[in-house]
Image 1 (cartoon, rainbow, N blue to C red):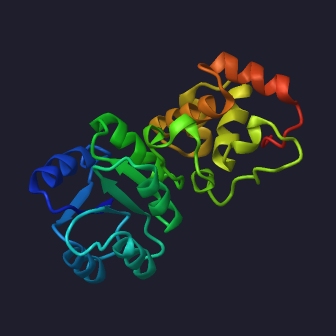
Image 2 (cartoon, helix red, strand yellow):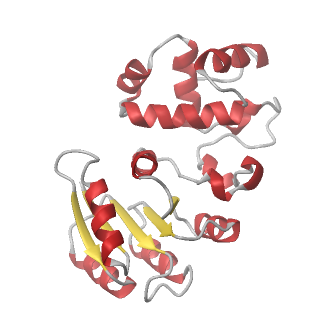
Length: 223
């Protein structure tokens, strides 16, 4: 796995790079200290699996740098890294196509969980930046059901992947089995379940299953 990490602070690059290398064996982190340098590396280097851009480093010009990187590398998930957790910055980045917004205040463990979620094809949104848990529609992903669907239950807010995880949870499968069934890492399953619990307004597996069954036995969950 190859990751491009662009930030103008050497200490942040070194610390974050060290964490990223623990994602799995063989992770390579290539560093850049500005957007122009990141663009040059991305253009000349073999395909990256992930691009992480500091929101306020030289050359970014607000979200313009993000937009340009996505335009040139549309198939590579691009993530914003920032010290800001203002809702305006989070929503703006996601609306411009960022696959995640990672605050610099996040713990190393939470950061790794966020990156794994992004690499699994989902979008990471820091709930701390979204008062009241009001998550913008972009978090749900392109394959999520519309918010105004006929059933009008919390299940409508789940992404397709979250529905798959919940379906297997309802069947009684443990996290390890769910991960194996969906070809995911176990930590990714845990992240999905945390999102499911939050969206359903429950705090554990048993409550999630009970609420799902109570809402409806015919909610379109994958069989």
